[in-house]
Image (cartoon, rainbow, N blue to C red):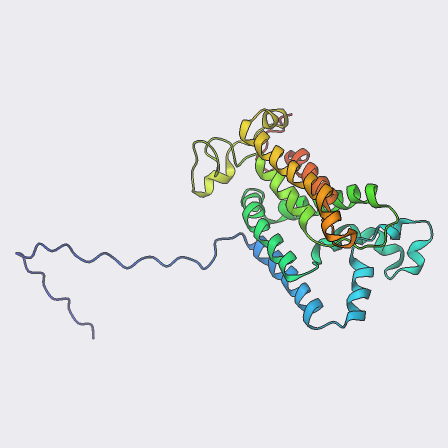
Length: 258
């Protein structure tokens, strides 16, 4: 049996209490971002907490991007064989060298990848990510052919997310535009065409800072960290250029302007 609410005193002018706040979801991140972050975290957890050192080396030789794999006859003596020459262009992006490396990449994927995933949807976002990872590995290979140090990390794909985001986040009504909005429509504004983006002051500023930082990585980090700890800035650039140039091929809202 329900209890009737007490009647309100007609002479009481105290405003009624506000309604309880509506519950919000724990996370409003696109599901594909949550899934990728979870998968990469699980892979690194297994590597760091379960695998022996020997098993970790075998995993790296099989799935990391190893420029020495592309020397004539080298694939026969490296785990993964000929197949790894193909799949390692993508699988290296799921591996990370440390928890800090993983956390740093996940942070940038949430910020920039989240914006792109809201616009593209899961399938197109995954296709763009894979394309940028492959482009990053290919560009890295041009500078490091024959080297034995493996390359790992999602940075090339995330660099592609950053580049793709520049094509729409600075537009009017976009999440970082001069006149901006914060509703889901902010991620569906008209994207800038290729030449239009290169003439946009905010985009040009972002590109200048981004390329400046990555070129600085190339000049400074080898001397500080040694070649084994160097940042793969070439892969970043390859992924970024792919994300910027190929944006319209994946964008479901693009007018295919050039």
